[in-house]
Amino acid sequence: MGFRDDFAPGQPLLNVGLISLVVVVAVAWVPQRASAVSERAFDSPSESEQRYYANAHPYVNEPLKQLVKQIPKLKNLQPAKSQQELPVVLQKAGNRVDDFFRYITDLTAREEISLTRLRQEKPYTKPELSGEHVRDSYLILRHGNRSQSEVVEYRTDAKGDNFEQSIVQQGFLITSGFALICNYFSSGFQSESTFRYLGDETVGPHDFYVIAFAQLPGKATLSVKMNRRGGTPAHMLVQGVAWIDKSNFQIVRIRTDLLAPRKDVGLNQETTEVTLSKIQLADVAAPLWLPSSVKVYVEFTTHNGDVDEFFELSYRNEHRYTDYQRYRVSAKVVP
Image (cartoon, rainbow, N blue to C red; front, side):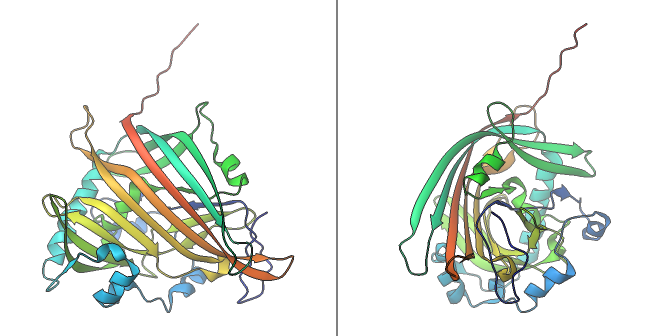
């Protein structure tokens, strides 16, 4: 099964099947200059896809009370009195993200994924819950040089094979791309989004700046990509909220949501929450902040062709990463 390409306008038809969601597509880092972004060929929404954002209403512009209703985790936020601190926070947080891409190297880690499919056969019926738990080797590989490089993420099973297709064929959704999620705040990409200083929040011993952002249609070159069997990938723009440690301007948590639903592919919601943890490798000068846990929620409107009914189908994926190490390949030459 897969996406149907013959649906009528205004009638999004999705037969649930081989789908994978890649959270961040544009994985190459452009250092320092925002103007350099146009020098790279990134995947980005086409002109036809841009029309879905013509009437988008980013929550970065909403009153804080309304935003807290959408994101309950902001309930303890102390509202900002002005936007005066925002430029400095963005500059220093951008420097930290740039440093990450400067020092990132080939890495491997252990990944555990809890995959949950919440299927609703008909509107208003009780959902059926099914799940799968997988373990794999998670790889982050850097290609290129220090001035211009590309960072790519992979997964392999114990045999070194890519197992994602077998998981998708069981009816689950594959999600990936989290190590680079802070790219929206890098100095090379900040011009592609609008930002708002929401306020401050204290979590345990740490104080945080809380910054909302929304990508700008027509300018953004980073995108979320959804792969579909038998169809071209769909590219989506996002909005989000980042928690930035006041002591060192490090992003330690970031949430992203769709900038607007994509009814053309039946995608209503895609929410990603990433928690980053400090990883200090013995032979890397600076610590690396890498994903330790990730939660993804995706909701589709799908179509049951047998009875001509629409219903909701949702997925929840939870990722956990441990034991980050340098990834090295050794070769032995024999006669």
